[in-house]
Image (cartoon, rainbow, N blue to C red; front, top):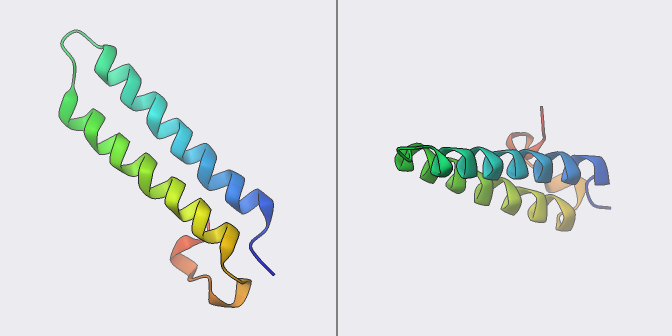
Length: 68
């Protein structure tokens, strides 16, 4: 049995929020690229977490991957 769909959706929503933040920072004049890059990295990490949660059985999902 894999993680609840709501857990996967929660991580994807957080990833999407990070991407939106990055877009806003890049569109700023002047662009704030270092922070935008950070948010892009965070978005990628959270998207990977959601993928892992969707595939792993519940009994092997570490607490650090469970959304708060």
